Amino acid sequence: KILFDKSKEKKYQAALKLGDVYDEMDNFHFHEAKDFYLKCLNISEEDLAAYDKLVHLHRSHGYYDKAIEWQLNLINLKRVQLSKKQLDYQYFRLGIMYEEKGDIRDSIDIFRHIVTERQPDSLPSLDRLISLLILRQEYPEAIEWLKKKLEINTSISPLRDYCRLGDCYITNSKEKALEYYEKALSINPESIAALQRLARWYELNAQYKEAINILNKVIFIVSSKQNEPAD
Image (cartoon, rainbow, N blue to C red; front, side, top):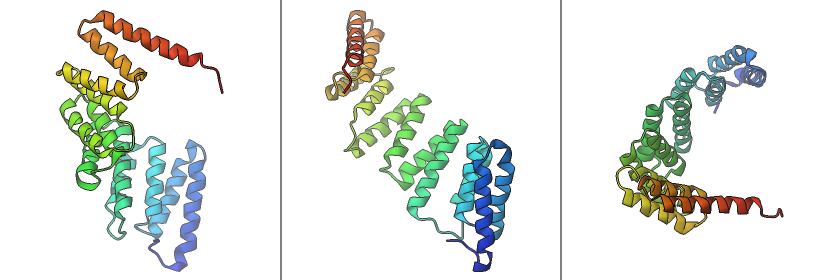
């Protein structure tokens, strides 16, 4: 809902459109686009569209600090009541922007907030949280969330998450790592990702013959697929 009277609507629409035109042009027109979006906010102080445009504009030009600032302002709007679905999306986008900026800890905190306070069954947020925890080698927490995701997820193959569980366990519980790699292969015996991990497991345990046998199997599978006739 646009928070201004009808007499200002044409000015608002014109400013928004001009901002879009400049935004779609080359990088040299960033400031013009920004100025027109700011004019929209001068007309309509808490207009969602203008905030969203400013977030996108700064993000697309790599100005993440400012994009995040506008995103936080959008989330904290007082006069505009965002629906739960809208707020969930805005928090998710905030987490993605922190990740794009390289602020992994802040990104983890946002995705953890989403899955603990807002959307416990959000598979995309769980997946991002898990990936970032693994990136930071925070394996115990990653394992907890992977198991939670497996409980929630009933429609997508768990093969990838079994592989990731194996990766989390491989440094301190080799038996558990092997268990999850084998679970992944029970779903798809020709999974390249799972076979490569299993070969690595054998290599780490100095079982080189088994590792070589599995890698030879990987080469055979890849070669067979490349030689398959086209439809």
